[in-house]
Length: 355
Image (tube, rainbow, N blue to C red; front, side, top):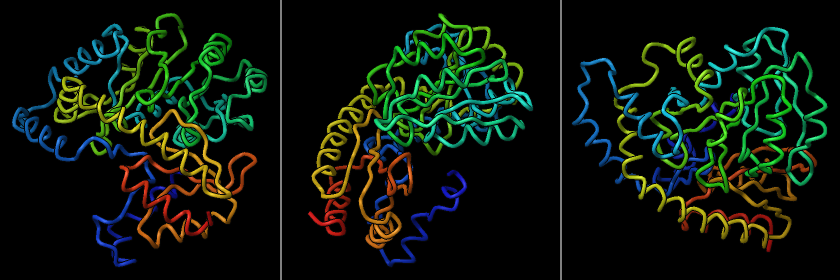
């Protein structure tokens, strides 16, 4: 869960504890984008810093970013709401559309932040487990809908399983759900489709997107929501702080959209490595890795996960320890790293799990 993530060892602490140089620690636990070269981004940051006047409050930077997003996704300007990462937007949505005593529905396993937003509202929280093949249990999700269910949260591609759910099933759920459906597309750039073009067909759909994954801006906290213009207006007016996002961050987001070719290049490179990684994991005895439509891979092992995790940690490898997920006992999630990082992960897993 998110609490344990907060307590997750920082790379500095690990470096001190195991005497491993900082640049040798391989951080594959937060689904960060390791394929956009750091230098490319820092060069852009310098240009953006020159263009910003830190003495002034944000002015029309947000509208300029929305114009770029509107072109990037080919959607109307007024359907976009910019926020301080998807986490803040999720919180905003829960405060607007979820009352004490109402019910929020989601799947299990999924991204944990939604649970905290729902609980803060004093709402009930209902989870429907995924099927064994990691797909949606449509029958049970539909069966959970009632007059009290106000919010349905679906993350697709789903974190931590990596699956992008069937498009027609998601559309069917949006049609049937009596409240607001939040579709978290944080990993859409790595996936097969997006539903952003559908927001005007529904009066109950909000799609969340982020700059933290494919755009490599996790440190700057920039996300956006897309919905029909009526919901977008409510989301903008009712809840936002006057300046939820800094001018610097807004300009950096726009700069990356203006240079989208470098983002596309990093996405194609990642997909190649992702498929190789899944293939290599599945060749290790006792490992089952699942197909992924995201920038990480979900897998289970047949040895106690705590021991495997500690062994990797000793070698400076940091992956996300999940433990029991559905019918599987020893599960992990690993960010797709650069080739040398994945080599290191595979090599060490082979060592502990046997060929």
